[in-house]
Amino acid sequence: MSDPVRFHLSLNVSDLTRSVAFFRTLFGMEPAKLRPDYAKFEPDDPPLVLSLEPVREVGRGGALNHLGFRLSDVKSLVAMQERLERAGMHTKREEGVECCYARQTKFWAHDPDGNLWEVYTFEGDIEHRGAGQSEEMILGEALKPREPVVWEHRMNEPVPVRIPLADGSADEVRLRGTLNLPLSPDERRGIVAESARVVRPGGRVFVHVLVGESPVENPELPGPAGAVRSVPFETDPVKLLEEAGLVGVRMLKFDSKPCFVRDGVGMRELQLEAFAPNANGTSATVEVMYKGPFKEVHEEGQVYPRGRRVAVPASRADRLRAGELADQFVVFESTSNRPAVVTACRT
Image (tube, rainbow, N blue to C red; front, side):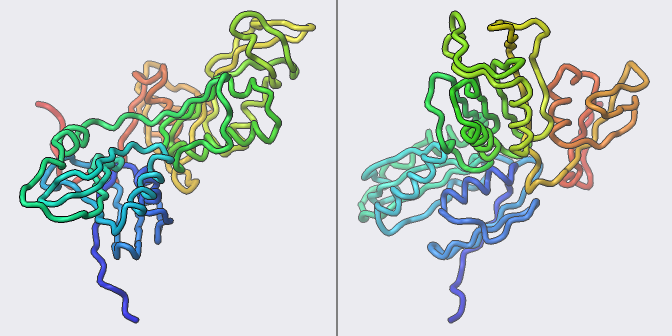
């Protein structure tokens, strides 16, 4: 039997991992092909070949109004919408609306680059256009800058076995006091592993925890710290982040003076950050240059000579770009998508 005719659509995307996560959830299937610089989905229903091409910047607006699918029944529509909502992706449902000379039930969703997708069922023709295609959805929300996706857990909340986000869909995960709950070793490893699963390549995991010079259970601390039920050994959180495959682990706060002392055991506030490695575990690098004033500086074992390009992991470049040394470094953009001719400097 010959392969059916398939509609082919190729989209430029600014973040391949986030776009793959969106369409994996939308279609409920894995990509037919996935490479560090390319992805392709081939659903049979509808017969489609959708390819995703990463570029440095995706233009907004233009001639494209929206994309979408007409499904055969409401049950299929609801299933698709529920997949997106469970993955933390916003949708807007409209029941029995009149649009485009037809009556429809539908939902709207934006992909990570702001393209508007309509999923609907056809309920019959009408004699007037209708007002179901709202200007708010087409013009307003689609052109808004993408808000960062942040998932946060606090100590007074239940710890989920699975974070309700798709793989690589979060810009940042924050665990505030999570590791001070009375969790088993497997549960602690599990929530950190889940954090690493949902954060995008280069995304950040932040941990705020009270640690001790030795483990302490039920420390009975005063004030807001009274919610602390378990104090891990001071090196354990770092190990958990490293074991989960996160890179660039850094201690943001760890004072010499303890916050609390119980039975001679000092307990200190620890703030950590770590980053997800680049797509498919690759060690992609970014060039940076130290501007001065010193001949060279050293940071985490790396030497940065003044005025010379140095290739570093992308996660380290992100830290230099956002950290306290940001004004002393140039972080160069990738040249992979640079036009042959460009005029950028002002005269």
